[in-house]
Length: 135
Image (cartoon, rainbow, N blue to C red):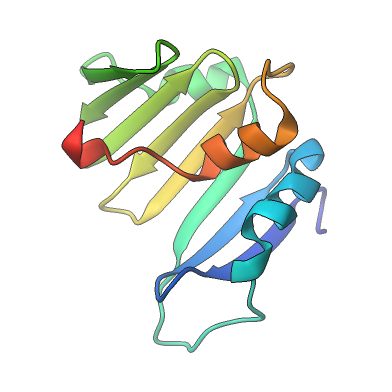
């Protein structure tokens, strides 16, 4: 852990992911959920998808979802998906919000202070996403 951020290197059936998490209560759940994919590193030619999980900070989150984003679907009466170009947002009042930027090969999630879901489910939802292309 460096400056309160836990870092994981993952290889998920070929693609590689570098995930930074600054939300300590998710660390154990992320280890359980993603542990089988953990690796020490990957060849230099590999370019990872980067992911970051942060605490919800209203000023950061509100600036990330543009007014021009189009609502494309509501899932399970709790999640809304928005898109603008190559970026997608998953908004869920139960745990927080994720931004997926396909062109930059990255995602970010922000976790609300007191999620209504358990830590394992929050960890899962903050790093996995519905197939937004088919919503």
